[in-house]
Image 1 (cartoon, rainbow, N blue to C red):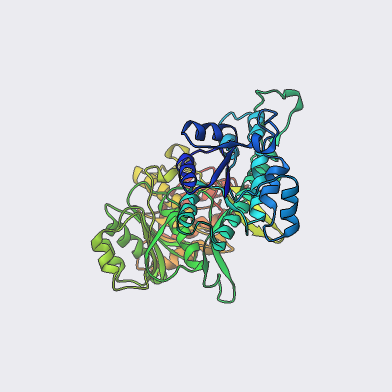
Image 2: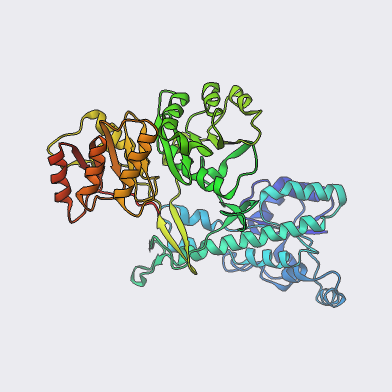
Length: 528
């Protein structure tokens, strides 16, 4: 049995080669890998000895040879193949261990030159990987150090790899080649090439959106059904999910997550992550129906629940702080589909032990969790894809432009910033009443901003909450004064809106007439 080893990342390779040698596997290797193994006292044959042809062109050509690819591609069950190998003095290669030049890591470095990017495009590695992966019935192809343990376990136990493992390794190999080629395509098709600047030090400008967009995801699980029971669905995650994102979560108990659970859980989690103080978010059908900050999780939850107890039934709840026993006991009194938090105390877990259908999700948050967000957002349209940078804009107090005679109080300004955070996660048209770090009424997803304002008032009334002396955030400008009049009639004394309407002055005049304060944010938060 022979193994060809050619790795860029040499993590664990000496130990693997030593184990292979102990099993009597002959070692073939290239360049730096061969040198490393020889230095460790392992008997290794360089590829140049196998091919009878020296490595050349600074190592660009070393494995592109019939004695390598013939040994990988020959079918052992085809007499003609084996006769051809014998006629040309080619030995079979039974195990290929390859990882590729670090193209993705290279182009991610600030100031990466075009020359460095091109030099880190692997040619021989992917060619060998494809050959071995195609001939999976006879050749094991190892493309990642995480696979070493499984390979060695089977070789030590059985002296060979099972069909099941060889096929799984082949699938992983083709997946890796797809990811690699996709990364190269994304990079090269984003380069704004300027021939007159071409040199070894040339760092090209790159378009934000590449000419071809290649995304890669890994399936987390098949789902029972999609948005509706007649639809099929699966959940996928990024190749390298960001710390603190939903895809990194661990389900501690409860039924399997559904398509709608996951969509709503993501909305809740992203919203609660936008607060740097203890917060609770309750989501229903992708809209916040209650959001609040508090001194502890119990207070935050109690305030959030008051906003709309009816809609909170069967909702998704997220905390940005560990859930303790007191918060767990309060939440357990309502019907909740999914409860998420960075952690749960042992007492909190005990509270939910009898509620076996409640899905508990633990999602560890990094220290800088407010800064860890998706950079891009996608939306499928007929035979196409919309791609945009994510709405990660954070509004600061200094960004607010006061446009009315009446000035907001410090308390109103704090509540405006809170309301604006919430409005970003409410479907347009969004109207959010807040007071004392708590949502008091939310109007979402209406075709008319006027209707959203009315619905927010209706919901507050149903929850027996007074909107007197509240602040209001509107995710986009008021096109007419009527929307402003509705929120002021309901009790609002201060309003935040983006501004930018041709009738801004009319709305400002209305605010002055009604004796309320108004600030312009300069940005809008449409969420469709």
